[in-house]
Length: 126
Image (cartoon, rainbow, N blue to C red; front, side, top):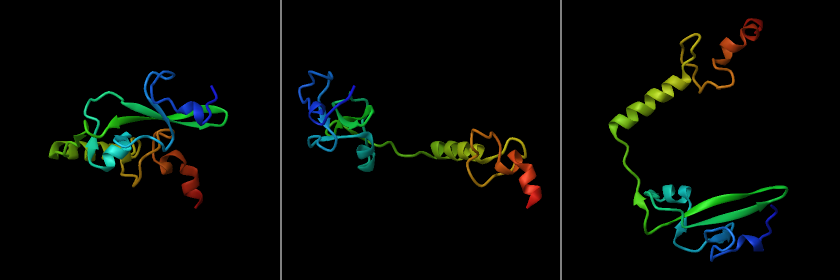
């Protein structure tokens, strides 16, 4: 489905089911999740109010959902338990399952182990 700039403008929602605007032309009072987060807010369970579409050549359009700023709630603060759980998860992503050392980086899932364990012959040649 090829969209032109004019076909992305549907403020009544007749074509797409929800109000739709072209990229960067959304009305005031609506924001994406990233924009809400930058302001210290979250959607807070509200439904999607509108969407913006950005047409692309030979591909489907990029879609960003918009939420009302008035109904947004403040971001929940980080608790000590959440911070500890996040630190533990990040440590697990950095620990090699083969040599059990901290690799110093997040281990790629494609390798499943640190680079030195995945390519030991290159370590010996150096």
